[in-house]
Length: 368
Image 1 (tube, rainbow, N blue to C red):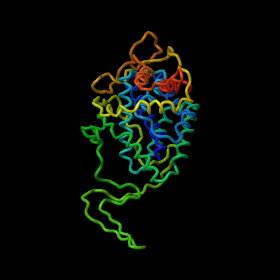
Image 2: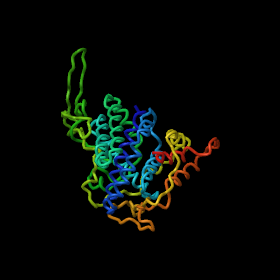
Image 3: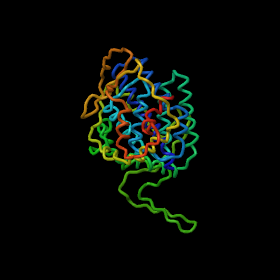
Image 4: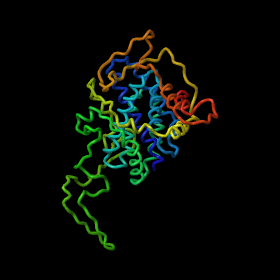
């Protein structure tokens, strides 16, 4: 089931990315029409049916670096431009949000409902664009069809795969620190009370099977867990009742309040992975690629985060540029230069093609 974990990870990360971008665009008073254009362009690329079909093929999770570069390309599929530092911090926020959701789900099956919560919010972002709505509906129905009938054990395998991918990433985020759900070392707090997962017994329960007879012995486990209470009326339909609120937009009520992420990330060491494996992963989607689009006068830069030490979320006006149709996210460098540097570090001697797989991945969304 590790081969089915990629779509769950991708669309949950994508949903969190849209939450942050939407909050930042509003906090910085970017014109509504341009903010809408940014969100719609990113959603259109992320939910492209061809990309979804490729995602749904049985495959291992990509490396952390390949995933990071994929979302950098997603951001730059819009008229918005983000510099590398802001992109790093944006991605860290996305990853920590998804890690919190994966660690806190009431049961593994709820991973599907976490994903559908993200998609429900995405539908609200683009409810005025019927063409993009049809793309999201296509992905929504495809995910429900593929994951709606999986067993609990299969979801356990998917969850374990996601936890393995996320285990070394422990960035501190103020919204979690102030909520007392994250420790100072960046690790999330695991509850020692509440309902147990569906189908589980409370700690201190021993079942003895003697032939056809079953005996239950209880002892004091000194915990405060309670039996699971079934929730009726759950639905996989759009806007249906879910088993959890995880995956909904936590920034809706934040307004312009600060939330930040420290830069002493423990993920830096985990990024030193095999360049050969990363190159292979980057080539998996090569058949979907198109030529790069030239930068147009509609591109803009947006200052997502302003401090090298932390990432405060405070209102910032967009940088002024000679062209008034440009929204800027402080982009001195583009994702292509970042990935080119990674490709250059790869110790691969053979070069049978003129274009590397890494460069191909950076062009992935340009054909959509």
